[in-house]
Image (tube, helix red, strand yellow):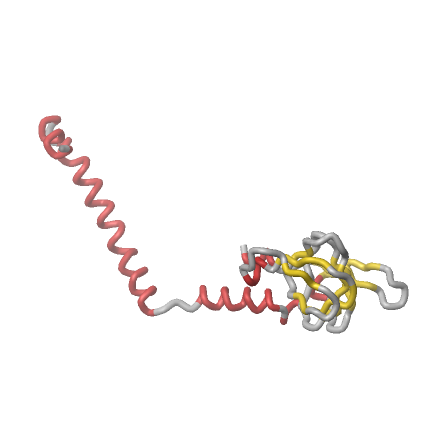
Length: 156
């Protein structure tokens, strides 16, 4: 789920013609100007150069309200432009070095590095759980094999 935060594409502004070209977010270089329209994800970390809008940073910071952004303010990759205005952002970090990429790497690293206690509990549960389930199943079924009267006594 957290990997869904990483944007897939970027609306890059061609410096010569000012046309917008859609590129993969991983292909955007530092210093490139990108257009972030309403509802679009910011492709990489950067600084707003044009426009005023609000950015939903809840996916990264947990902030419940969108944050106002204006020229000179920084924005993080993976956040969403929720305002009514397009922003032009100058990229300051590639998508592999953005805040959302660092967050994804940290979560993946934390999931792969398990403590000794977690390993011990897991190995114990692999043996203990099937034994307990089998014992409960036996206690519920074996008394009935000796007749309904014995099974009823065990049931209550």
